[in-house]
Image 1 (spheres, rainbow, N blue to C red):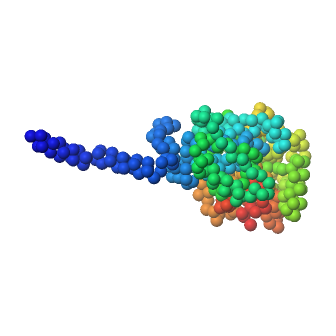
Image 2 (image 1 turned 60 degrees about the horizontal axis):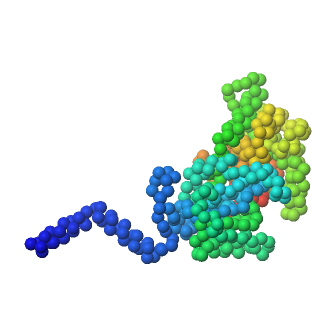
Image 3 (image 1 turned 90 degrees about the vertical axis):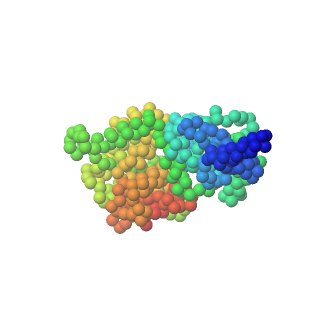
Length: 439
């Protein structure tokens, strides 16, 4: 009887093991055993409730993982400084460095004020006061990731990664150092803190398309975005008023010109021309006016918004001498300077960036980081609209951009300008170039 009873139990168990549920459990057990044997330190499982989904908590540290970025290993970087677009580049470079180490970037401080040498006068401002934190992580999901300092369990045990400097600190040495810190024993640390210079000055190891992907994830907080909308609406309204003589529901197109003629810029660009032995960097006020006036296909009258430094707002001469049909306006003449005055430098610059990005025509200086990032954004916009790479420089392309510091043809037009999305680094955008990809 006992043998018969055991036999029945065995048959019952075999039938149960053949069930689908039992097979799944068996497969999962085998996978866990294999993982424990071959990958004891690279994967650990857990959950995150960011979106109410079951996720792998700690992902493979190898670059290019299909799973995403680890959320329990972090990278801390120095405060990000200088101009708005220098800060955006520095932030993207920090993100891509964290991606290389397969770490979450701890939300860095930006700088609301603009001081290049007086570091003690820098006014820090949190990243999420300018850009949407959750929107960034949603758009960049699986590529790069931002984290809060509250996510760190033990900041006392972080290790430091000292950034080298000087001519002997080559791009090869920098890359080798990053690779070393992506492995044991450094990789065991919960937080790696990079110490040294501003991330804008770090060596660049990534192609333009990687930076562009990070930039696409940057969305202004509602307050700043709404202010930019007000400015753009006012510019278009002014165009309608000039044409019809009264307020109109029809909002007209506008040209945005990033006009760099302030004294500190002219000193800087003259030095660049001497260093590079070229004369296509600086442009006088008269040269800018002439070349913008020669752009073909612009209907007149057209409002020209002048994105200029605050120091030029009291210089009425920048509004004089434009070609007939071009109607120049700056913040003060538009009556929107009160919007800008409410905010520190960084936010004022962010508003102007949006105004230039969304202009029907943009004209800037190819050695200006601000202009260069505007053109990168506009190039991305064209490609998303379905414009083929070979057609980006076409005369009939929508939302054209031009470099007024480079003569485009014998008729005095500025050079057409698009970003080269296949460049292997951000060098030309970061430091300027006379290569506009439209020669």
